[in-house]
Length: 262
Image (cartoon, rainbow, N blue to C red; front, side, top):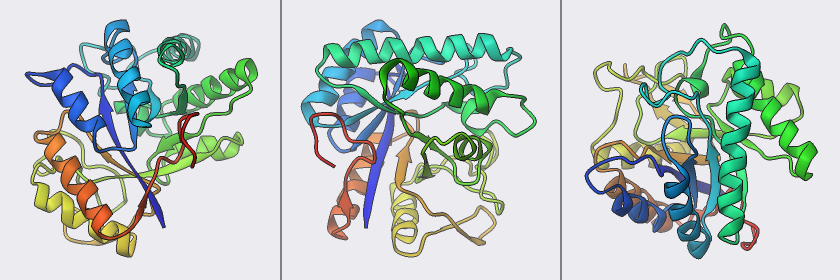
């Protein structure tokens, strides 16, 4: 069995964002780099891409609604053409910085509401897939997309011949339907490293996570995420990495950087 451990970076979170990014980069195998939508800018992308390259960590474009005020976690009334243009520019900006650092963007992960947008948000999941396909036409590289199992995003990817990679969260609570408990509700964010560790072990060994009401639900994942803005994110990530190594599970990026073998 192989598993990937990913984290969000470049978001300017916490009292010392640069230290947090470096701490996460030291333990994860993939990073979702904010590229100007909900957070991030040319400076932060130029800073984190070389660090990822040095460590052989895969870089994913953490594309999002162009909504810095709401941190990309709110629904946004935006037409498909505008959304496509914004997302494609975000991907291009990050790829430019990655190439300058001697590496490349190897996958896509939508952020916030764009990640969890229900099927009723017309075309927004499809806009993400359109970005991936346009990028493939221009570069010859069809990037995989990281998403929640069973989500409209991964359904759209399957329909369009794009590889969807299922992801689970060590620091978020689940409903019995397998969706994430909305932020702001009690218990939605898991901040206790021991709780996160228990969830990880059950996920790896049994393909299960216990939902917020205590019901076990099946969750099959190729990558495990720790949010950069979860309190104690670096500590949680270190504990998870140590547990994965102790279980002798092979930890490797699902979309390796160009200078690292799978």
